[in-house]
Amino acid sequence: MQWRVLPLVLALSLGACSGPSDPEPEAPRPLKVVLFPYIPDSAGDGFASLKQRLEADFERAHSDIDVDIVFDANLDLYDLDEGGTLNQLLGQGAGAAQVVEIDTLIMGDLVSKGWVQPVALEAGAAHPAAEEAVSIAGQSYGVPTYLCSYVVYANSPHLSSATDGDSLVQILTDVAPGLRPLAANYSGSWTLPSSYLDAWADTNPTGVLSQALSLPLDASALDSFEDVVKSCELEAGVNPCLDGTFADNAKAEEAFAAGQANGFMGYTERLFFVRKANPGMALPEVISVPLGTGSEPAVFVDALVLNAQCTGTCAEDARAFTDFMKDPAVRSLIAFSEDAPQGTTPRYLLQASRAFYEQEPARGDPMYQKYARFLSGARPYPNQGFPQNRKALQAALVDALK
Image (cartoon, rainbow, N blue to C red; front, side, top):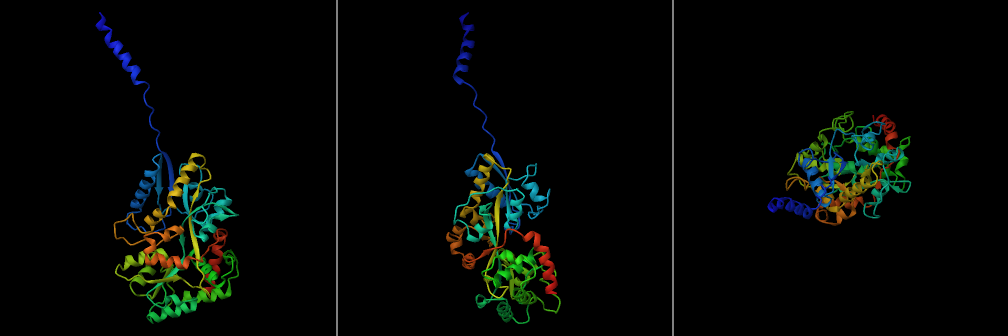
């Protein structure tokens, strides 16, 4: 009867050798990130390729984090209302995100509402204007990503000699008399006031830009700005740059690309749409646009902020992502459209990272090196007061420019 006992003994022996079952691996921790959708969609796929590339590269280095990157043009990332878009994204509900990319024009509002938390920055890694733009009362609240600045593109060897609004108009007029000297978009309660602030900065090289938010308008800055704005008129009183005609669908860019305007004014990245409209067009000359009585660059700054509700491990994961996003290699991926098929036009986005301009491919790129030169002394737009004052400024400017 001993053979009947054998299976039981064998089973007990095997059980003793195998020990307790291994624990199930922990699922990756979710991290939701909302990035600016206001950049060129180089691949033409709704940013699907960029989203996939960024997520894969980040998760390759952080397998314990499951990042979900959102590019959604329907999200109003300037909505500061209680219960509005940013309140929800930087809240605790189901729609909350842990990291959000914002324009630092609204940074002061986010801080005063308690929706974002302080961050630590490596001194000198970002452009000085970017470091200033993310700082409120000496404390940093964002990790800078992009710079944005008004520039003028033109096919004129004399463009670099423009030193103020009047000389700019004359130089552009001389390129091809009879054509529109400068195509641009000034319409809107964000665009028109910010263009005026650029003119104010040109006119007041030692002033603090927040002073330009107060009325009355600066007479010297306004006179020069008005000359540039009205250069868009080919018929008296008909100004497509101001009346909304050039506000949408890259119409100002297309006018310049088609040779219907001698120059174009806008953000650097709008060159993507110029070249899209005319792929064979030679790279234009570029300068910081002089809208006032001088030429002193002013820059907007975009930055990644952390939801104030994201603490502990969540905050560590969020910081891992912001560290990833400030890497010069990641900035190059975005700037040079490396998520799109080879040969795709760069996005021509100004980067806040100083190292970006010192490394390839930016170091050998003619446009990015031109951008770097005029950015050296740039001042940031104010990070407090603009949302509250923009409509009053717009009304005053519309009245003055009639």
